[in-house]
Amino acid sequence: MLMYKLFISLRYLRNRKISFFAVAGVAVGVMTLIVVLSVMNGFDRELRNRIRGTLAHIIVSKGGMYGLENYKQVVEKIKAFDHVIACAPYIEGPALIKLRGRKEFVYFKGIDPNAEACVSDFESYIAPFGNQPGDLLKTHGEKNTASAFGGTELLRTGSGEPEKFPQSFIQNGEQIVLVTLKEWDKISVKPFIITGKFKSGMYDFDKNYIYIPLATAQELVGSKEENAVTGISVKLDNYRYANEIRDKLQMVLGFEYYVQTWEDARKTFLTAVMMERRVMAFILFFIVVVAGFNILAILTMIVLEKSKDIGILKALGATTQGIMSIFLLNGLLISSIGTSIGVAIGLFVIFRINWLEKFLYTISGWRPFPPEVYYFNQIPTEVNALSIVLIAGIAILSGVIFSIYPALRAARLDPVETLRYE
Image 1: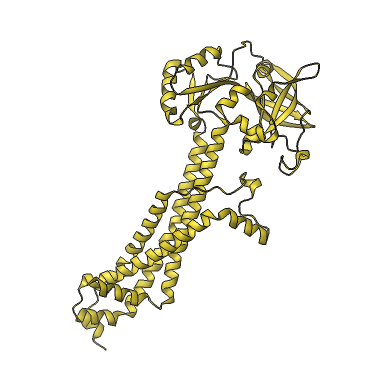
Image 2: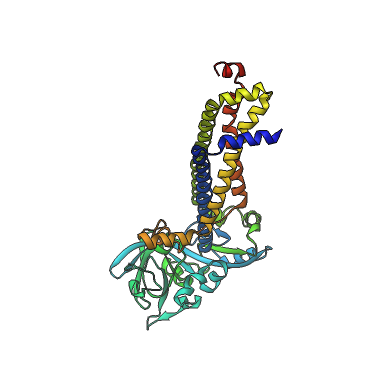
């Protein structure tokens, strides 16, 4: 019984150009969803990695620029917890920077460079420029001027990458000046010598941050306590314990302390990125819906054109369910073939997207993802098998759902009426 339904279903679709457009519509919708969501997943992964690299697994602070006093005692308490493998104190605050006649608003971060390298990606940020963490502790000249590492975007004076065009950046050995509040009614002015650059891959961080030695930062802000800092960065052996350790630290240290994971600290931004992905998926889903309406329109036209054939089938004993099955099979075939083609093309585009982007740039001079805008050397992608299965399932299901109306219409045709004038 199934064979005659499949035979008639294929016969109705065969040699009809309009069926090709229905299949193409489903394929384009599925391909677009897979490619865009995979690129969005890749962007999300890279952004999270880069944000995480500038922070630590857990951040402990107490409010104020140097509100956490006797940080060494706090560090000992933190290190007593399981899964904690490193801690690094820091002082962070706003300042005005003067460099080569420019004045800009920045944030300075006073760190112990060797400790910071253990809790964040600090060492990998400076390595491409031939720097070591210890370079930040060097002093210069008779006045023992302290060192500073500036972000590549902050030190930029021209265009080009720092590795290829070092002359486009403020050079090592040049002097800068930081101006900040020492007390509410006093300012602190201190010169520094640039001894290195860093590039985190986060434009805002590279544009607005400068690293200086922790002791110099304490002197700059006028900290009266040698052991007073803004906060302590904590690294765990496995991030999956972060929420558990955060809650335990909060109970032990007390609620006058702020204990956050890096995701807590950047919650607003991460939520915005997540919402953007969801909205994008919702909008793109309508491409599949439009393809479904295309299937509905095509099958309805077939029902109108083949009403005589349907009448003959009913007169020969075809059941209502049998007639419905023919057109439901039409919807299933169109959506299944279109989905298979869409998945295949989508996966090809994802795995070759950077090659395709370079090819497009070679022949047209246009880049859809310019590195200077998106701050990525290549287009990031992440293929999620579950998402692809879900997209394919929804596309096929929508094809069947949109074929229900024409199937019902065909099943309800009266064979007497359809054959009366034949």
